[in-house]
Image 1 (cartoon, rainbow, N blue to C red):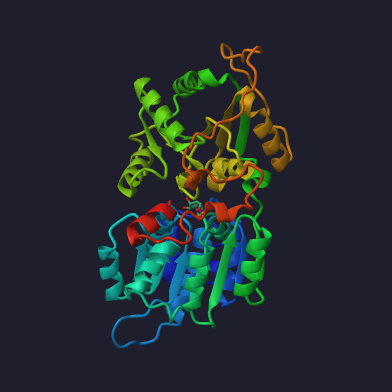
Image 2 (cartoon, rainbow, N blue to C red; image 1 turned 180 degrees about the horizontal axis):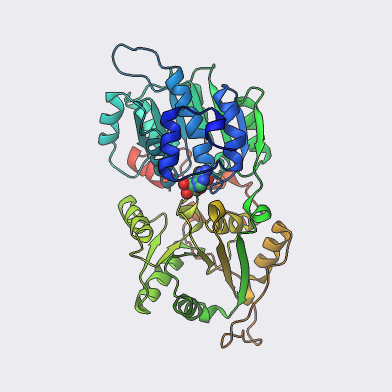
Length: 429
Ligand code: AMP
């Protein structure tokens, strides 16, 4: 099946072909026709499936088809909500890329950066807003955005938005939107809370489920390298050097751990940068840009910071430490082997983490092959110790290993809202 046969207009087909896509991905095949018809959609899909183009292309087409002549500021007609700044930036980039031959205007809105340039852009009038919820509400408060003419609402990574404590903000945003609109709702997981939200929002939605990468993707090779905790860094440096890896994403459990490992790798002569919630937006953007440009070989990330990062054709993902939440393993390895490319996900696992490894293997319903690297055989006399999460900061550390149902704990500032900057700065990590 081709993009042409999906009924997309010439300007969009041109943009798609300039991007180099020859064929729609499964989610695009399934999602584009019903969205073009104006139907609501409930999509079970995560980043890496091509879902962004899956909703952006038909959204752009509908905005063109329903454009009316307006006097004064053009109204916001499409709103895309995302949990993180990085995802907002990426989705906004896609909107620009796919809409490059159309006369539509868009703005991206997230916290942690100055509000004024965003305000100026909004005041000039845009058709599409891509936003994290907290900063969007700041703009609503300052009357720089009017959401009363929104025709299309997209909730991207709805599960992560709830995980991050955005439910109250989402409800506030929803209250500002017209009742009659098209809603596209994407989530990788479907807890009761997500189902409840979807039920409230969607009218007879078309259901689309794209298999999760852990079950579907045979293009990701997974392996566990058992190793002592104190020798992980040495093993990682050796693997990077031996394989001559040019681009590797490494996950740590904590922000402190990410900083420490980054420093050690640099000492080993390997270019590295850390990306996590304590870094300024500027530092995060630079680290990601340097990594994408190949100037930095290793990007060391925590789970929340890495969520949704779109780094094309990432060949290697390393779990320097296993995540406390088994589902995060699936999200982590979803960063590799994307859109048909081969990828390798390896986990350096010490004796303390064997329980976490079991949880992961239970979740993905398979054993991950174990491979002891010669010279790094674990010392059998070392006894397991409890895992310190070492965060010393309950804002990020409030996740229970057992699941994602402790959302209230994750809401950093449910009552006190001291100021716009700090509020959105903390939330839209
Ligand atoms: P997403 O799931 O939207 O984050 O997209 C994952 C990656 O797949 C991005 O790097 C896209 O540029 C890429 N992609 C999206 N659609 C296609 C397609 N039809 N063919 C090849 N790559 C695609």
